[in-house]
Length: 307
Image (cartoon, rainbow, N blue to C red; front, side, top):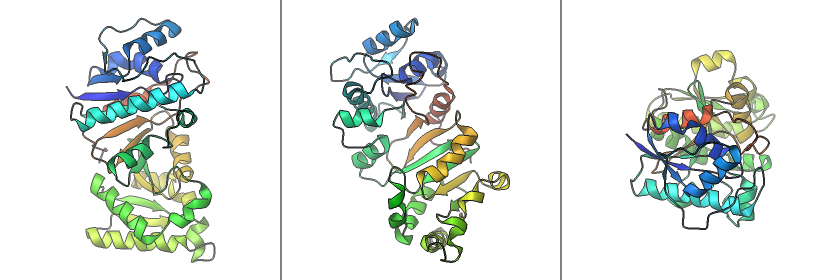
């Protein structure tokens, strides 16, 4: 049975509750190793009034055991979630686990803990010296993001044929997909340059990459307002968006509870839930666990993305 290291996320959010709730299910398909102190899970069980499972396998962190302050943003929880993530990466680097699954962090808590990276993806890019690819989705639809956590005002300056060509080629090498729909960035893809010329760079990148791989894999650019139409979602399951929110708004509207987050182009396989810490319900009501179950399921499949 494959081992999966689980980074527990922000202990003040819903992460530990999700892990506890689904432990009996996921142990049927993998051997989960929780990167945390057992005592932290025991504290969570006390708050949630749950019985602590006896068969959980923990890998304690090299730091003090923190307290849980439900729904609170603290530097302590930020540091603990970061160290849990680093421990999961180390286990994967040392081939002690097959893959890693991350539960949600709070970016403000990381900042309070003086962690320079914004989130998981940025840590992975720095750790492995790679141009990481953030892809989110579920069996019915995946969206890869050319730019992820940057301001909208900075997107245009990032769109060059050279950068996008490298991105698309890396995406193809990681997934070997049959066809991918690429979104433009301006209304009507710029209308021939009248509403912006960035889409000319996108078109050139698509042409260059298709020629390089000798297949017409990447199609586009297509205006984002029609990219996710029902007919396109019948023809394509993989999309490339130039900007974070343009690609993820329709994905989350359609498949909010099913979607997961995958980091591509790194030497380890990392999946994550596609939701936040949910402070509004943390330690108060039952969290939806479908994203976590989907992430764990993919973590055991060697990155087979339903193609």
